[in-house]
Length: 112
Image (tube, rainbow, N blue to C red; front, side, top):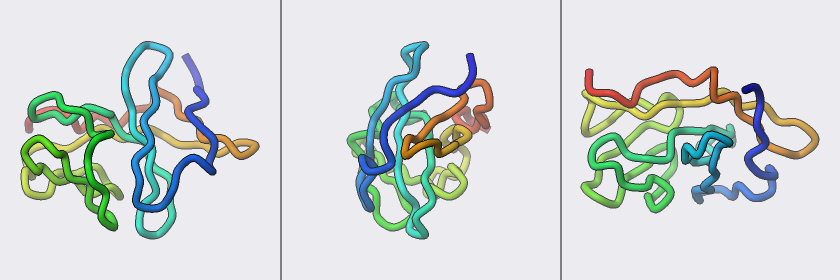
């Protein structure tokens, strides 16, 4: 597949979650960590398959609205459901756009 363009860097605001859809139909979310780093994660919570795009971002903590599962946006690791995390995608910035390579995904979205 290769690198896919998700959105412009200007579309990813501090404290907000931007949703995107990959060429294969998978949903991802794009966000900025508290330090300003841009991250891309799977867009569906592993708990009950709810959209993480509807979640809340507070500093480096992403909270799913369904059952308040929380994830560290620096690593994708679960916080209050430590047995499960969310998959993180590689990120590249090119000419003001955020790109990801779905083949380089770090899978955390399964029960351990």
